[in-house]
Length: 132
Image 1 (cartoon, rainbow, N blue to C red):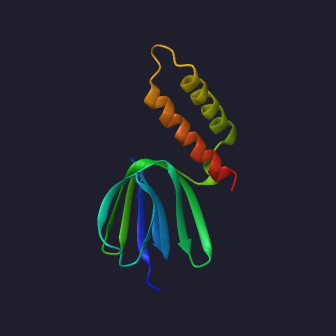
Image 2 (cartoon, one colour):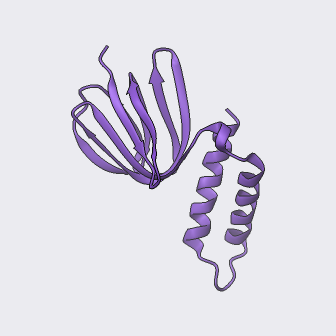
């Protein structure tokens, strides 16, 4: 089976670079899989879990906001943040979740609803990865 190359780029560094059998990416319209010889495209990603398959091994990362290009057996993801489960501070994610939920339940003047909603989504993704 041929492989597909992936690079995940954050503003400060290349976080992931390697070859995998299959990749599942959280797109804005739902999760989608990419294998070798995939049709080229560009799309936005949403906060979710990035799954990298190599043989029987699956490696998961929490990924937040960005875009992906697929072309010539190569995937490039440019994102704000990508984290492995060991990089996530569970207590901090739980606090962030609670704070965002409180802001969304009891909106007051000056609260940015979209920002609170985005914070809640990021916290939920982080917590789902740490509970795997």
